Image 1: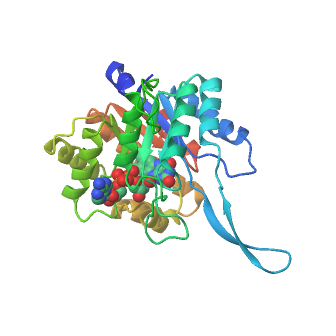
Image 2: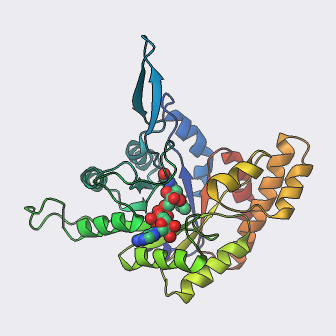
Image 3: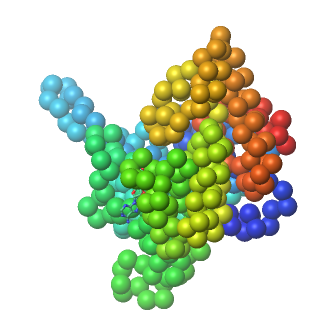
Length: 317
Ligand code: FAD
């Protein structure tokens, strides 16, 4: 089912999860053991992230260097198919612009359509590990809005090869990313929302947000969206903090703030279990507040400690 239909038909708050493909060398069982306990909460869908290839310098036996491409987390499409098969749940692959030509993107979308996948999250992706700034593939897309346009074209039966006339129309429901604390490259909140609105006006159907630890950022973002005429459903992205290292890593990686109270409580924690307890209580409080404010959906980033998400859901559902 499409995310927009699920939201429109839901009688109570929807729960959904996001997972990462395992690193190369691990089996699909690591995904199942991660998700099995969480399936008790009947998620409406599960997102599967996509990770671009990295270029690394490898030393050959003769000592010379060679640049090789590695993909540490392959398998997004295969995992989506496996989840749909095993759990009978909708799976949403993330599609990124980085590293893809438009033709490769089109072929990926054809695969997804053939698999019966109805939703995709269309993203730009970040700069590659060896780049300072995001650089598009020389035959690819620069911004997520260009990817949205390509998916909308396919939904209208328009493919890249112009001699395909009356092509089969795909029927993807398109999600895009939104940033309660603004995207780190945006000069200010208004410009950030301006480009978000362009994605919606071009045909995106809903917005999934970056994680946040202060609900005020989310409510302000919702209000900014409304003020700019964005009426698409917005789903809040939620992730627990579970250890002290994350206090500095998460702000750097995701460009979000950690509130003083959360920081202070985490610093007081004496051991791993106490840290997890702080993270559980904070996220439970965030969720209860979102529910009080009539959130239609709670989307959990389950990376790392699914048991913390499990404990939070036990308390709020
Ligand atoms: P865009 O919407 O293209 O925006 C990027 C920047 O460009 C913004 O600052 C925007 O304001 C600006 N901009 C947009 N359009 C224009 C324009 N026409 N002209 C000028 N400026 C413009 N990354 C992954 O690699 N894999 C994933 O699976 C993944 N999943 C994610 C899931 C969620 C919910 C979120 C929030 C992020 C995810 N990311 C993922 C990270 C994401 O790829 C990065 O945040 C990336 O830097 C921006 O992606 P975007 O789709 O928001 O880009």
